[in-house]
Length: 509
Image 1 (cartoon, rainbow, N blue to C red):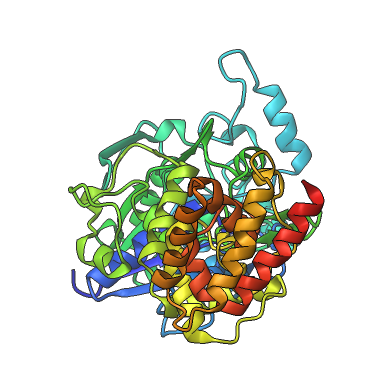
Image 2 (cartoon, rainbow, N blue to C red):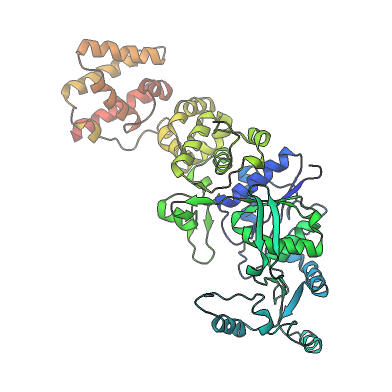
């Protein structure tokens, strides 16, 4: 495991799907486990799909997750450039090398000729004809044209692509770190385009050349790329030798309610699928991210880690350090893992509960201040956070659970007390205000004992008074123990809220 180098190679075309972040995470864990290098390479060869701002968005997502690369466009190492569009000349050289060795060919077919091929060769047994061994000799390429004709077309800069020449009836095999021995029949694979008419490589050529030149030792990617493996294996064999090929691991899919998890699932079922908010540059449509939904990054990467991996125990909550220590590819599952948003919420709840004030402080403060709730006293704020965090599943829950400690409720849930409110209870709270006004040591026990003593004297059931008191102090039927609330908001504020509520209750009920 010496000189281990892994990479993540996203396309800057849109939001970063949670499946992509999981690929990053597994790369990152493997790299840290082996004191190795994690490379981020931008695959922007398809310029028609390039989206301005998407590359920076990827880096912002990884920074939020705490999974920043060791080498990238923003932190270059000795194997750059790290953006494929800046490596264009490199790929042409390898495309020409494949042609000179007889493993690839120039194809001059126009889009109209390709469409005609798909129509002419379509049949009941072959509904979607491919440009393969059965078709290549009926098309316009350097295999069917003379050398003179080919040279003339190249000299006059006629648009063309370079295609791999797939061998026929050859078994192509490799050992996947997750799936074990995998075999392919070369005859069912079409002659993939390696170099496009604009001179840019396709994924197939670029990924092999870049992995070779960047000395990548292990390549982890989604299971959807498994079908492309035979092309990549041949390219390694033809250009760099199979002994130099990275070890591959094709990660299982993350499943949604109806197959592979997609952005549409998120929109349909109301949960995020991107790490952070993403706004479509064409439609202006906003897709909510896990960060903006109120997830902690620690919870987000924890839930992704166990979507396809476990350490062999019943443990579910892992810090990043624990994941690095325990992670191994042989514990990654072969089958796809189903994403469960309720389980994701559970992870976030657990991480909020175990988070210290210093890690929650700025996040919660920002949410409260967005609601015009100002925090002045840090020690007071810390007490409130520690008191209510077990009641919060997502970070925005702190607005309801903590906001009333610092801002008098603007509305009260009158309906919650209406059915059992009467003049005796109004009298009780008037007297209670007088009692607690005289408390010199404003502590929970003293506030509660004054309440209990008056309850006993008035012979009213405590349960019929605790709910109105809660609504008076917080505005609704939520929050921690009511006397803890009174202690933290202070004597003057407690009395003010009770008297204000009495006026509202007596007018409304």
